[in-house]
Length: 184
Image (cartoon, rainbow, N blue to C red; front, side, top):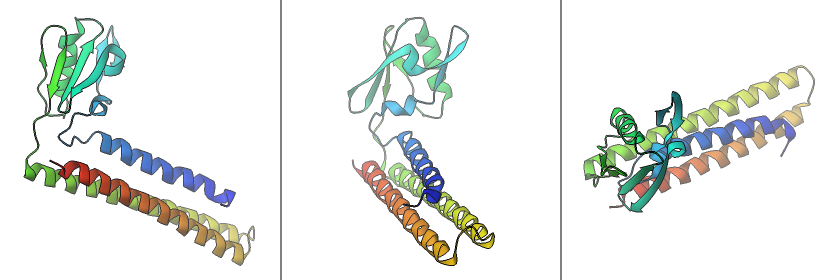
């Protein structure tokens, strides 16, 4: 691949990584500790991730268990979970917090699949915008006589191949996530 495409390839990869991060926060009926990644708690005046103040495990398919290093953190962690958009109610026994994921209804599964498809489409649009920026940049280079018309055609063709490969990667990620959500 041409070195002039590298910066655009990196941008496209970041788009895919961002989509994967978004998908990790979508719960599909199974407990996924990554749902808690963006939650921060006040730990001695410092905002810290849950992973920094507690041990997080998945003892069963639909339960996340959070065991704070210090028992006084239980109330703070519960408060953050309740205030989040996770829609879960934490329970604790004085040492451990448990998050129980209810089974998703068929209707909710279909809503989640629609959301997942919308996010995939947004990622595809971002990839296409990066392709457009790359092609515009190549045309400017050709106008400034930095590259020949043949080089321009080759770069545009390579850029299209790159775009197609990232779009197909998005399609396979989407298919995998949709299958995960619809699996009862």
